Image 1: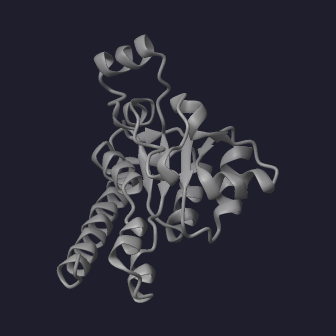
Image 2: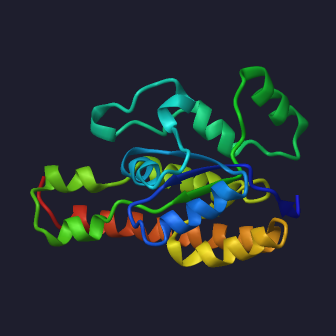
Length: 197
């Protein structure tokens, strides 16, 4: 698929720079917004229509937010190859809606590390669901777009104004996403290797 139309998106971000403007553009252009926690609250407070991810999963966020997006209703909607009839049939059979865009940036573990928190507290700032969604979306860039930070909002917006997200941009964002998640894991590995349990 060369040109991707965006009809359904997950927004779940730590860095909320430009979020409201980006989400407003998406919403005004007919995109269903799905979100979690603080991001959902921010969008709802701005009067934007937004669906909680727990409505998508039919399961509440649990364990203080440790488990919220790790669910087949989310990940099947991300990982479905839209050019694969079997994948699309499976979604239809299971009543799962596909996603077209995933906008996620990660918990700021570097900031937590600087605070000198006890290791048990610091590990709570390790994002799990975010990297899973980022990597799944990046893998499936032929069918879905990943937006790993606010610095990309303008380019995504401009392409959508021109009729859809090109395969070239989606591949570029996927490449950047794998770079970011690799750096994130590397930072955590370095931190764990230098702190006592």
